[in-house]
Image 1 (cartoon, helix red, strand yellow):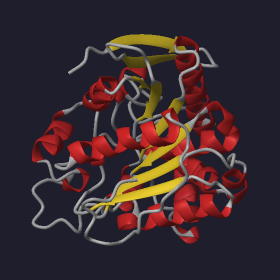
Image 2 (cartoon, helix red, strand yellow):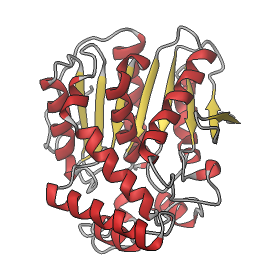
Image 3 (cartoon, helix red, strand yellow):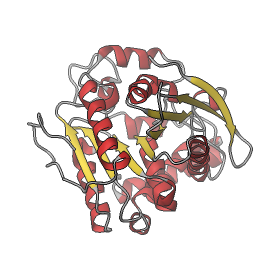
Image 4 (cartoon, helix red, strand yellow):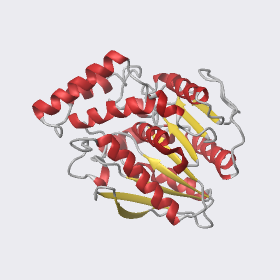
Amino acid sequence: MKPVMESTCKASDGTTLAVRTTLPAGPVRGVVQILHGMAEHAGRYDRLAGELADAGLAVVAHDQRGHGATSPTSLGHVADRDGWGLLVEDALTVGELARAQHPGAPLVLLGHSMGSLVARTLAAKDSRTIDGLVLSGTVALPGRLERVAGLAIARASCRLRGPGRPARLLDRVLNGGFNRAFKPARTSFDWLSRDEAVVDDYIADPAAGFVCSNGFYVDLFTGLGQAFDRGGVASVRSDLPIHLLAGEEDPVGDRGGVVADVAASYRRAGVRDVTTRLYSGGRHEMFNETSREEVVADLIAWIEGHVVAGSQGGDVIPLRRKEIDGDRP
């Protein structure tokens, strides 16, 4: 595994963000900025960062607010107010730092799960700040009634119990069903990956798998609205290469359905280079799956073909099918 450099940078409001950087041995051909998911941290992407570095790509990943070394004493709580806006601003700040450190190198923003929603919001805000967008395990949009009810419960819980208190009810309601399809269940996190060692490491990790706060769920519902907002999608520049990947058994993304929906929304908005890839049998964390070597190879090939060497146009891979061997984005 490539050595990881740990550093910090100051966010727009003065908050100290913990940053992890992995560099290639030779020239930097491109930069990948990783935005991790909910209830995890940037360190879980060190192996992926090392493999990308072997391909000549510098990798930068920060622990988002409420996560990891950025918020060790307040895991699961982003801010008392406007947390989603702060997450997006933090991603912009780290991206600007990476560009300054590697001038002229194209920057790919890779967001996983919750991080994919932050990435989509950032792209809607100003897609000129990135040269490529990769969305991994992106989140399905709940129904309108569920969104309204969830946001109302989160706001009421903030008023009654405080924004920093764990939102145990919302956690059970929104996340408790993810494991339902995987029987017999070995653990309550089998939905993450078929690799049992990955699941066990996640469960044993004190900085992963925690219950997020009431305020966090206000932020999350806010982020969902912004990520799926038609106006925001329409503001993404038409020449931005976008790639979506997910497992066919990922319950967070409606088992591939959200990939089709999000890809279609970008195409309708006029984005010309939108590619997709579903992996047979894959669950939520494709970079930690039993087929991860194929997934990482596909990611590197996409970055090289669509960003480093310039966009080649989007060959759309059919969705919701079982046979995928031989297909490449």
